[in-house]
Length: 601
Image (cartoon, rainbow, N blue to C red; front, side, top):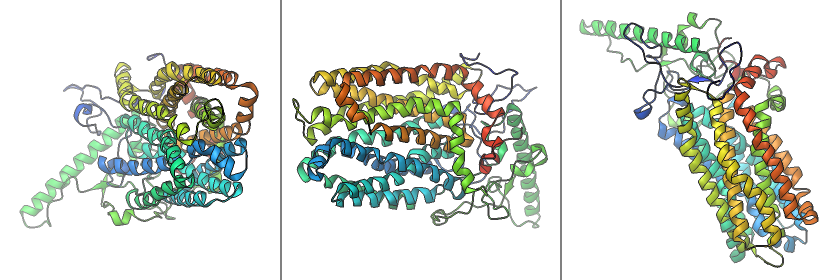
C-alpha cells in the first residue's frame, strides 16, 4: 500500500495513476523518458502529464499567458454569474414588503436557479462534447445578461421568478464546464491552484456580493444590484467572444499518459525518438542539397507539428483514431504541415464537430455516472456543504431581520464579510498546498502520482468546517452578537472552497476522460438536492429552531467527511473496478471523443 492507498491485485495500470518524475538513467541504460516533454525551472525533472502533442493548436501547447487569460476571463464571468445567486439574501425583507409575499417565497427565489442550472449543465456538456465549449460559454453568458436585466425590471413575483430561471440556464455551464476547461489547458501539476482560483471566483463572489449588495440596496433600492451586475455581464460577454478560443481538442491516445500504462510511456518515448531522428536526417539532407544549390532552403526542426487536429471524413475535428498497434502508427507523433490558428480564426463560434456521437446518448451518460463511487463521494462532500451554506443564506433574514437584532439589508450584507475572508483563506490553502502536496507525495511514492493525494486536504475542512456548522445554529439560537455567526459562516465558506477544490481536482485527475459528464452528475445531484431543501428549510428552522437544525446538518456533514477515509484508501481500487467494468461502455454511452483519447487495452 503506497502511502496508505490499497493496490489492486493483480498489479496493473489504473487510469489516473501517472509517472510524475522521470527515472534516473545510466550510460548503459538511458532513461526511458528522455524524449518526453518535461517541466521547466524547478520542475525540470517533472514529466508533463498528459504529454502535449506536437500540434501548435493543442491547448496544452498554448503559451501560459494565453491559457491563464482564457481561464481568467471564464472565472471572471463565472464570478459575476455566481453573484446573482445570493443577491436575494440581504434584500429578502424588501422583496417581502414590495411584492406582498412571504420569506418562504423569497427563499424559492434563491432555489429556483438550481434546477435550470442542472438542466443547462446537462445539455451544455453534450453540446461541448460535439461542437466544442466556446459556443456554450457565449450562449450562457448571453442568457445571464438578459436574465439580470429582466430581474431589474420585474414588477411581481412571477416575473422575478422567471428571470431567476433564465439566469439558472445561463449559470449551468459555469458550474460544470469551467473545471473541465482546466483539464483541457493545464498539466496535472498545474491544476490545483487553477481549480482553487475558479472556486474562489465562483464561490467567493457569492459571499462578497451581499456585503456590497446590502449597502447598495439600502441607498439606491434593490433593483440597482441587478443593474450593476448586468453592466458587468455585458463587457464579460464581449471578453468571452474575443478572448476565449475553442479549447476542446482530441489528442492522439498515446499522449494521454495519465490514461495509459507504463508501456505506453516507453512506447511514446520510442516514437518521439524515431521522429526526432528522422527529422534530424531530413534537415541534414536538405542542408546538403542547399549547399550544392539543389535545395529550396533549410527546414528547421521545429517547423513541423503533429497531426493533432486534422479533419476526418464527415467533418469531425478529431485526432487519429486509436490504432490497433501504436508501434505501427508512427504518424501519430510525426510532424505535419499544420499551421497555428490566427486570432481571427479562433474567433469562429463553430469549429466543426469534435465527435460524431449521438447528442441524446450523451444526455444520458451523466445519469449512469450516479452509480460511480467518485460521483457519490463528491456530491456527499461538496454538494451538502454548499447546500448548508445556502441554508444559512436563505434563513439569514429570518434569524436577524426581526427582533431583537432588527437588521436591515446593509447589516445583513456586512455579515458576509467573514465568509468572504474564509473563501479567500480556502483559495490560498488550495493554491499553495494542493499541487505542492501532490508533487511531494508523488516523490515519496516512487515518483508515481495518485489522484487520491488530493483528498488529504479534507483535514482542514474537518478542523474548521464541521465545528462552524455545529456552532452556527447554537449561536443563532442564543441571538449572540452578529459577529459570532458571521465568523462561523466564514468557517463554512472556507470549508466549501476547499472541499470543492478537493473534489474537482480529484475528478479531473482520476476520471479525466469523462470529467465533464461526472461534474454534470455532481451538479444534478447537488442542485436538485439544494432546490428541494429551499422548500422546507425555512419552515424547519421556524419549527425546531436553528440549534437543532444545524446539529442535524452537522451530523450529516460529519458522515460525509468520514467517507473520505475509505475513498482515500480504496480510491485506486474503485478506479480500477470502474475501468474494468465501465458502465458507460457497457450501456453504449461512452463518449466517442473520450474513446479516441484512451489507449489500447
